[in-house]
Image (cartoon, rainbow, N blue to C red; front, side, top):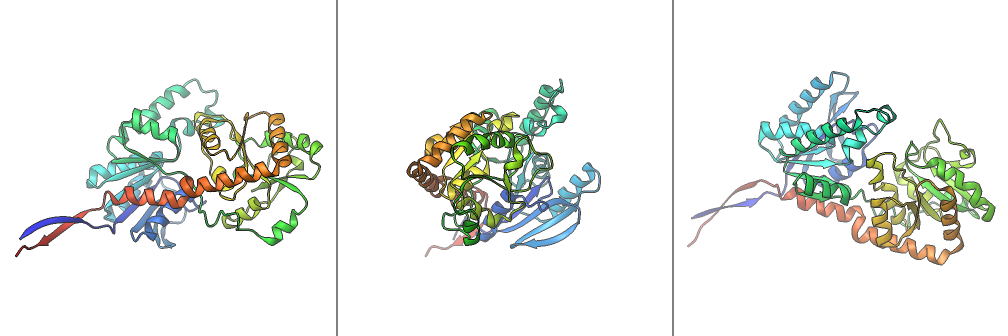
Length: 390
C-alpha cells in the first residue's frame, strides 16, 4: 500500500479588511469574495463596522467588528475573530490589514495573501493635511519600511497595476499577481441600455464623466473645457454620473449631474454617451500611477476614451488604441480632443470597439477571476490519499 496527497480544492478563506467594507461597499473586496464563493470556497470577511454582528451577503459571511473602540482593541478583536474562523488561507486587503495578516501568519502558520489597492506611502499622506508638512518624506519612508517588513511574513502579494507590481517584485522581492479592477463584462456591455435614458439625451452629443468627483479628479478642467467645446458643437452635453459636489469649481454650473446612481444603472448612462473622459490629476504619486475603474468601465461599453496622459493610463490607452491622451490640466487640449472625437464618428467607433475587445481579452473581471482562482488554489491544503497495488 502506498500513501500520497491530493489537493482539496474547496477552501475556507478569511478575508480581512482594515476599513468598513459595507458602508460604502468596497467593489474590489466584494468582487473577489463573490468570485471565490462562486468557485465553491467558503468565505468569511472580517471588517470594522458601526453595527457589530454577522450578516450574509451573496453567500459571503460578514463578521462586523465594532469600530467605536480604540484602534488597538479593534484590531485585537479582528485578529481573534479571524483566528476563530479556522481558515486555510488569510486574504488581507490594504495596508492596515497587512499588519494584521503578518500577525495571523505568526499565530497560526496559515498562508497569507496581501492585496494592495494603492501606493500607501503617498496615498495615506496624500491629503491637504500633509501637503506642506516638512516631515512628509520621512513619514512616507516609515510607512514604506513597515509595509516592507510586514510583507516579509506574507506568502504573496496582489495589486492593481504594473507599476505597483514592479515595486513588490523588485524592491520587496515578493511574488506578485496583478488583478486589474476590471468590470463585469455582462453588466458593462454595449447592449446594456435603457430606452428612457437614451430618449432623454436624444439629439445631444453626450460627453460622460463617471465616478468620484473629489479633489484630484480634474472636475475643474472638465468644466473649463465645456464652453470651448460648445462653441464648435452647440448640441454637446457634459454629463456627470454621480453626486453633485458641495463646492463646485468655476464653470461647473453648466454641467449636468445625475445624482447618485446604482452601479447596475451606470452602464445605461455610459451607453447613452459618445465619449468618456478620465482626468486623474498627479496630486500624489499614488494618483500619478493610478489606473481608474472608470477607464475600464467605459472601454467595456465600447465607447472611446479621452484620458490624462499619466503612466498607467497611457500604458493601456496607447497599447489598446482605444482613445486619446491629453495633458491632465489643459482645458484647451481636452476641448480639442473632445471635438475631434465628435467630428470623427467612424474613428470613435473603432476606438470603442478596440477598447471592448481589450476588456474581453485582458482587463475584464472574467479574466481576473481566473487568475484569482489559480493563485488562491495554489495554497489549497493537502489531505492524505491511500492506494493499493495488487
